[in-house]
Structure formats: C-alpha cells, structure tokens
Image 1: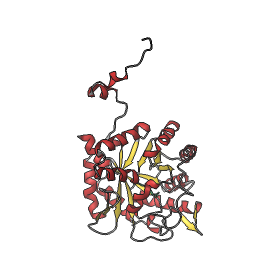
Image 2: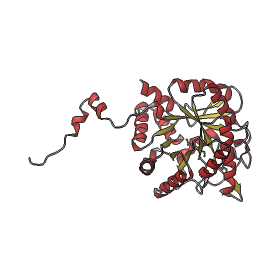
Image 3: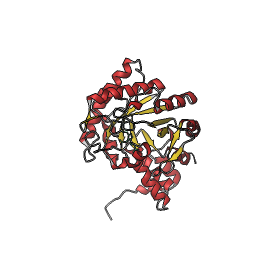
Image 4: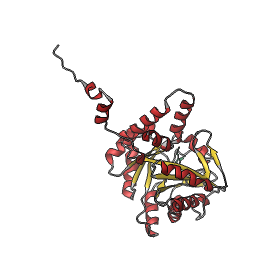
Length: 324
Ligand code: PBG
C-alpha cells in the first residue's frame, strides 16, 4: 500500500501523553462568579430556574464570599435587586443603592477580592429596559448620563472594575469620561461590547427580576444572526477606551469569541449565561448527563475558543472539580 497516513493516536496513547500535549488548561483564576444581592435580612432565596444560585441579603454575603475566596476565585460580579423600581432606575445610581451597599460591604470584609459592578438600568426600572423610555422608545443619549452616574457611584462604593451591560451606543466613552473626571482614571471598563438579544437570558431575568415589561431588547442588543456586527461593536468599544471585551452569551457563540479574540489585543471575557447554566443543571438533575465532565468540557471549550476569562455560575463547582 503506497498511501501513507498519519498516526495521530500516538499522542493520545496514555493520560500522561495526553497531558503533555494538552493545549488548553482551565484554571480557577479564569473565573468570575456572579452574585445577586437583595434588601432584607436572612434572605437566601434559590432562583427556581437556577439551582444552586441564590439571591442573598447583605448579612449573608460574608459567608458566601468567604467560600468563594476559599475556593481560590479572585473576582465576583455583583447584581442588585432593589426594593423600589421607577421609570428612571433611581436605585441604580443611589449612593445607598443595594449594589453600592453590597460592594462596600464586600470590599470592607475582603479588600483583595476583585469586585466588578454590572452597570445597567434594567434591574432598577419599572419598565425593565436598560435605558430611559419615552413613548415606547429606549432613548440612547439620555440614558448615557444615568449610566455614567451609576458607574461613578459604584466606584465610589469601592468597585474595582465597571462592567456596563446596557448596550446603548457610546456607553464606554460616556462612562470613561465620567470616571476620569472624578479622578478614577485607574478603574478599568469591562465592556459587554458584544451582547446578543438572546433567549439564553431567561433564567437571569427571574433571578434579577429584570424582564422587559413591554417589547424586547432587540433595538439595542444584537441580532444573533450577525458576525460582522460583533466585530464592529468590539472595535468601537476598544476605540472608546474599553479594557476588557465581553462576548455574551458564550456557548452558542464560540465562533464569535474566536473572531473577536483574533481581532483584539485586549483580554476577552465570555459570559456563560443563565440559560447555559440552567440547561446543564436540568439535564444533570434528570441524570441525563455527567455534570462534572460536561461543565469542564464546556468551560475548556470557551477558553480554547479565546476566552481569557469566563463569567460563570459554575465557578464554585468548577473550582472544586479542578482542585480534585
Ligand atoms: C443586564 C444583564 C443581563 C444579563 C447580565 N446583565 C440581562 C439581560 O440583558 O437581559 C444576563 C446574564 C445571564 O443571563 O446570565 N442587562
């Protein structure tokens, strides 16, 4: 027989051999853990569609963060569920808003933990949109000022990184300018630059109580059919001064992660969103999949695709599994 062939299996012959040629390694320092904080006391309320994810009151936060730190996780992203919502999302930029209180509490107890603030209005507005609403439209430029105020108040409370997720045009520029004016020139912006309008956010909206009360988010979040648009979004946010670029969701968007990674010199962050978490949990609860193996495979594939960091509800579980 003249035709030659390649013996790829040589490099797969044993566990040691496979480890030696492994290209991607997950590490606990890749993970950012999302935390949901709520007003009240002694509240630890499990999100029904997200087993293992809780809304926590401030008095129970310390215990949760202690565990996060014990597992070696170095960063959390904080989401707030306010007591009162209104038309302009006042609680988002109130100096004693729920997120501001949570951030200062966490930083007081754990000064070395990186605390990231999600900067958006949808959890705080009665209409559930990420900007100001007038006659059914989500106003762009009018929303920027409130988002910038939100970011400044979050940094005043102690946030180490601002992560704006609202998808208004120009939000990075507006927030950068406001932070700089306040002297916060060293606070990085982790921009949700490439954020698709996605059915994968369903469970999060239960967790944060942030479903839009009319319409949808398609006039500001991206169409999942588009790839070039992702490149444009990432490019403009980099020009406006972003320090990290988030792609969201991640699991169905690994092609986009790679595309953005190839274009950009900044760290790329994948947001492994709520629906991606819930699907795995539901299948695991039914005994249909091996959760541990599947989660590690999913997270590794995200890193292979180009994620330098991953925001994931699996962070605590994955940290345990990696340590084993
Ligand atoms: C706020 C925000 C959302 C998520 C993160 N920040 C919800 C949305 O845009 O509807 C989704 C996170 C997840 O699904 O895990 N705008």
